[in-house]
Length: 235
Length: 397
Image (tube, rainbow over all chains, first blue to last red):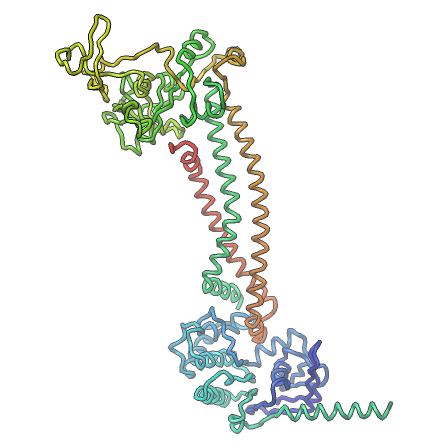
């Protein structure tokens, strides 16, 4: 279970402030986060993954209360629990497909690159239909293929939670459907929770839960108005 | 994975070959060039000092002592002035020093032809590799390198060069018989063709051989006039361009031998006292001959060279600093361009220390590769520096 309560976050030197009164996501849920640009969707993913820490409120993933963790503990949590998929794939151009998938193992001392991991990587590429591209560099792949490599990279550590930030944003309609199908299939098969940030409203009926950030914005505006009225009456 | 950053760094450097090679080349040139100049100058200094030390005193025409030393030691004839052969006789008669004449004005196949006496061979400890020393007019002994590059052996012939190819009325080339070749000495002697002084004068046109006009008296076309003292002939008389046993008797010199030119005299005094007296004799302003100690002449030259080198050193330091600054700029720009890559790694759980290690390994590979190249190039240069300096300093141009 992922639970967010009374979350408040503000970037330094920025007017933007994120407020999430309450959000609960059950294990294995497929959740879509929608909302206008700049409403804080990506920020919420950063907070859930422990990259950023909230100014106020709690975020618990299972039994773990993220704001209470040290930076090292949050990093360990990210390595063991989270798989990231990005809109622009973020593959390294100087690595081939195989090394891109194995990247988490190359950059983290705590992960051991064993033959089992390599077999898993090969198995994932077979499932994603890119087995024959293992030795190609990422810039030699189509966009759809690049996103499939990125999904393999997210799944290679066998995370419990997959965070996908507009994974279909750069893809054509055929690839959009294909990538989402692959993500759903993998999440279902491995009993993983899937949180997807998307702008594409045509996709949201495929998710178990849809979180609309417009509601949070409206709530934030209401509470801001309430605060200012209270301040007015007291003065 | 412990060696993950190293593995990634290798892949990054290999993938960005052009960028990596440019960086390697910049650092390589910055490090290697000052070193190369240092090594070559050191070698140059050693060689020039060794040659100068083995030649205590030279005498020659007044003027540049450097030109004189270059002619006597390196057979450079570009601006050689001459003194009469009588100076050799004068030194010998004084018994202050042994006098070895040097006549280095001409070339054969671009190699300097050095007219001298056989004492030169014992003075320089030159050993005959094949054949024998020159014995008769027209014979030569060829230095190791010259023999090697012209593929000469005893019994072969070598034609001297015309002084001026456009002056058809000038002296004709002389065909020299190779009597012997020398062992390698790694000195300018390796690049020279040694002949007897008289042969050098024949090349210069002071001595010559032609058909016997007494025997050709019947040919009225050649003879212009005949008296008891003198026979006058026209230009149709055949001059010999080769000295053979059959025509050697016809070779003769016009004028006094003591007036014939030489370019320098190597004077080997028996002791310091004699050398000082000799110096005093040629030290007066009226003397047409100058006394020079090559060791001092070349020491002055090297002092000047090392003075100039300090400017190169300062320049090298400035270039090193600017290269370092440019390298810093390249690294900073590269980091900026790779911000997203670093952010992705961070999101995937990478420590900041690991990202720094990745950067470190990339630079370490570049510097390691450069150091390896500098090491190889330096070893190579060290091994061949002697030959390079010989090539630059001694080889005939």
